[in-house]
Length: 459
Image 1 (spheres, rainbow, N blue to C red):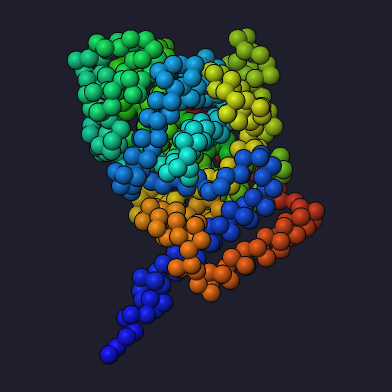
Image 2 (cartoon, rainbow, N blue to C red):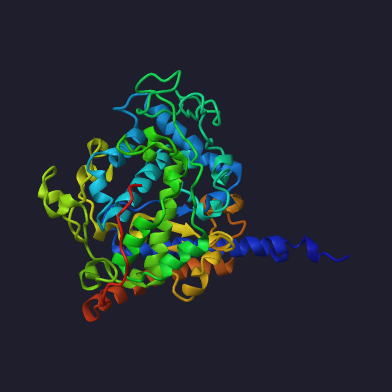
């Protein structure tokens, strides 16, 4: 009898598992080399990378990891403003200094930090949350669907109740106000400060940009100043659901208290990262960014930066090493990075330093439709971006990942062992090369600024 089919070492499934295991080891190599390159100067190395995947490609169970994790963080706060970690993070964006930052060159980095901190609070729950990475909302998929956005059908609730001050809890979202509350706009029937319902009101006339429009803006603005000002003035998708006066300035701008906001800003950081990578500014060493004005150039167009009258002048620095100012109560929390450290653009510039990796997904979404797949050909840094097929941490590979982590030899092949050994050798070689490069070569990217600028929107 033919016994070939009984040999597990040659079946299609085992070969697939073998390749996936080798991918896991390759990603492990990425982690090791990434830490070696930066020597973990920030002291924040993670046990596993923060792989950020597209929200629309996740199963509902995968989405629930974010939803349940966020609800648990809120539950741990006990309904108290002073002890709710999420409130501490969200409070910065609502602070009176925030409008200044929104008109300054460091605003993209400033926002990205909030996403990282919420990731941290969810990862700190342990267990299944330990390797959580913030998914991203590809808002370009909402173009043409503004009256019934896809994001409203993914477990985060939808439009608010027009007969009860647009409250979302218990109307389009099954979670009660006690489970998820915000300390503003206490207008609904059962609101009692500070435990007040989340509010959303869809606008009747609002256009979401297409992937092609976003891609064109990223591609056509290769200098930082042009890119940052274009991004700030062009689009603000979170205002799709702030279509009522009390959700807009001069009232408190409280979008940062909505769970969708963090998925949105994960996408914003994706756009910033792919702009950085595809213009090859990821190749500029953090210590050499001073010589690369196309990669970053400080600016501020808020009146307070020109003539400070409400805030201290030292808050107005937007240079690579100027400490960003954070209002609210986040800095008071011992677990926050900014409790003990200044945060600067230089520290935030390179994603691998913060353990962040973006999964481009099935490559049929934004990456392909935007034109970036062609523009970035041959430039993508595999320490910044991967695809589903490269991602052994993806849920479909959970069994394999557990096997690899816990030491099972079910899929540990000779090739896998060679990769692991090679990884260790490469760390040593790479370290020596990196030191030599630092001493003998200085990367400089210079040039002018090209772009048309307008007023910066608050988001």
